[in-house]
Every structure is written in C-alpha cells, then in structure tokens.
Image (cartoon, rainbow, N blue to C red; front, side):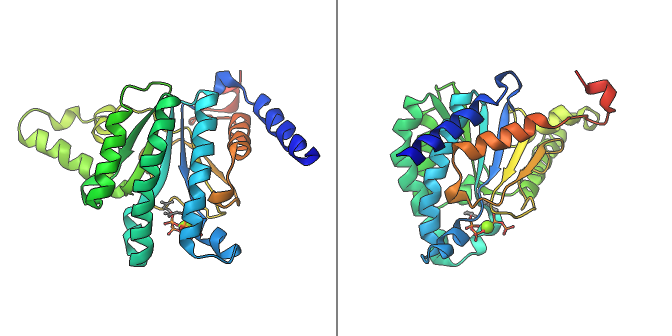
Length: 258
Ligand code: IPE
Ligand code: IPE
Ligand code: MG
C-alpha cells in the first residue's frame, strides 16, 4: 500500500510540473516494443499487443485530461504487412475487438476518433469497425484520437501529390498556387495542427515512415520503455522534457527566449 501511495504521489508531482499553458497541441506516438515486451515475459508476441491496449487507454486518458487537442498513435504501418500472417491477422482482430470495447469510453470522455493511412486495404471487418467508431464519435470535441493504420508517410505524400496533380489537370488549380498550406491540406492530416512532440518507445531511434512532412519541426523524444509498460507518468515525463527545450525554428536563442 505504502508503495502505491508513493507511486501516486510521484505521478501527481510529475503532472504538477507540466505547464498547461504550453502544452503541445498535437502529440504523435510510435508505439513500439510490444514483441520484445512479450518475449521478456516468456509469451508470444500477440500477448504484447494485447497488453499494449492498456497503454493506449492510459495515454489517451492522460492526454485528454491535460487538454492535448490531438493524439496520433502509429498502430500499423504499411511495412507491417510483411510480418508473419498469424501476427497480422491477430493484430487486425485485436483492433476490431478494441474498437468495439472502447467506443463507449471514448464517448464518455468526449473523444473523437479519426484515422490516417490507406484504410481501403484493411480487412473489411477492421475497416467497418473503424468507420463505425469514427462515425459514432464524430461529435465529440475534447480531444481527437487519430489512429495511423496501414499508414506510410511516403504513400501519404504521393497521394497528396496525385490529388493536387488531378486538380491541376482538371484546371481547378494552378501549379504556382501549390504552397505549404495547399500541400498540407492535401495530406491525410489536412486540417490538423502538426505534431509538436513525437514520442517513440522501446529504444529505437528511427521514424519508420511516420508523418515525415508533419514532423519537420517536431521535438523528438525517445524512451527505452516498451509500449505495454507506458503509463500516464511516462507521457508526463515526455511533456516536461518537451517544455524544457528551446524551440528556435531557425532563429537564435536571444530572439526566442522569453
Ligand atoms: C509495436 O510493437 C506494435 C506494432 C508495430 C504493431 P512491435 O510489434 O514492433 O514490437 P517489437 O518492436 O518487435 O518489440
Ligand atoms: C513502427 O514500428 C510501426 C508501428 C509502431 C506501428 P515497427 O516495429 O514496425 O518499426 P521498425 O520495423 O522497427 O522500423
Ligand atoms: Mg517494433
């Protein structure tokens, strides 16, 4: 019990160190390390994915409680289709199950669900569960939870280019009018602010084809914690670290210091 109290006190203390006025509006997370976590526990990889759901729940709740506007979670990359068939199908089933289970909680917490990625290539049941979740939560406004599914940043950028090229071909857009704003609007994330903080768990220091355009100026935060162990306090720590950084955007320190 004493230990529980200490942990709770530590969590509250971390939370109180966060400056609510300077929260990142959008946090993106590469949820990694489920397989290694399972291996550590002597279990099959899918056990890690199942336990990753707890981390998703905790992180979503923590972000919404703080007042973060957008939370984007990388759940399945286009490259992940190359995993063993059984793991892919288990992941797709887990998604359906989790979506069905969590929609009520999302509604209770006033959280809107959205998705980015090539959803047309998802198994029909997964796609339907996802679309139903998006539809059922579309009027919620506290936070937007974005799932990146069958997502590839390079694919997204090519898609945006194709979309704009078609408009040029149709004569509704002039090539000279393609600027950063037009291009950003043509991406899957059109209308969302760019993530200011990108977190990757499990100690890997790479982007794995995630949000390449949108994170041009994001602060990157890498933690060795495996995703199934990620809890509210880990999110708090990442935000505290983010708030200590000086974001210069090409300027010099004296120009941006308060
Ligand atoms: C992240 O954990 C989940 C997905 C990519 C779906 P991994 O399954 O990549 O776990 P590791 O990296 O093998 O430990
Ligand atoms: C990135 O993790 C994709 C997701 C978290 C969904 P991976 O585990 O697939 O990335 P790599 O293969 O280590 O780069
Ligand atoms: Mg991995």
